[in-house]
Each structure stands twice: as C-alpha cells, then as structure tokens.
Length: 161
Image (cartoon, rainbow, N blue to C red; front, side, top):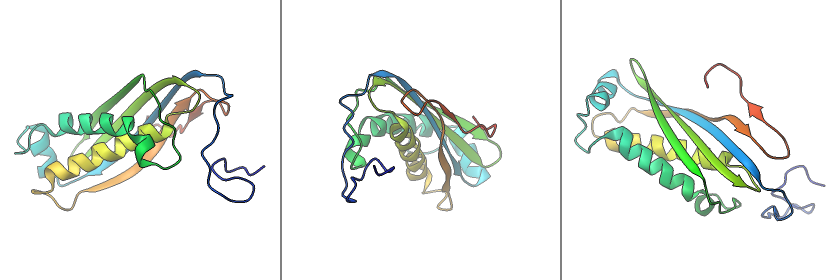
C-alpha cells in the first residue's frame, strides 16, 4: 500500500474513502505570522486603516475560507465544521500572529481547514493594508496541534502555541 493516501498503488490521484472510519472529535490549531512595517501595525491597532477593522474582516475571511477548504484543495472532504476561531496576536513592533482553531466531529481531520483559515486571514490583512505597506509578508504558516484520528495527537512543541 502506498503510504501517501491521496495516491493509489499506480500513482493516480484519489480522494481517500473515509466512509468506514469511526467519527471522533477532531481539533486542529494552525498559525502564521504577517510581518509589516511598525507604522502599519500601529495603524491596524489604532483602527486607522481606511478599509475598516482589519482583524474583524480578516477573522470573517478566515472563517469563510475554512468552510470552503474542500472547494479550494482538490482532495479535501466537505466537512460540517463545528467551530472556527481566529485569534490575532500583535507582536510588537512589526508582526501579527494569526492562530486558527477548527473543530469537527467527523471521520477526517481539520488540519487543512485550520491552515486555510490562517492563510486567507493573512492574505486579507495584506489586502486591507497594501495601500500603506506593500512590503508585508506571510511567514511560518504551519500546523501547531491536532487531536483525534487514527494517527493520534500531534503537538509541534516549540513553545509558540
């Protein structure tokens, strides 16, 4: 059996059949960092960006993206998510850490939904602030934790979660 579950033994792409798996509670936490000029972060924190409240718009974008992950990533399953939470942690003087926590009771995990939420929230921060800072970057988008499933729990364990 091929250890890469999205390919069959002949190398063809496939959607993994999760129909026989027992549903369990599954949680994934992902994070990423948006780096920017210190003045840009100050504008965000003072709600002085002309497009509106950056964190609230990015939060909605991240939630909407998590719900559409199956439509964006070709072999992801459509999931009825129980919750999606996004947290924005300013890291003075020049960064914001975005943390997404996604929960589902289901047959497959929500790592991709958490990663997608962080990615789209970060892109939304960029979009809302690009008029004042085109040098922004999205960095370190990664899975920090996951629980549930056949492979068990995962914790990156580098002290950033």
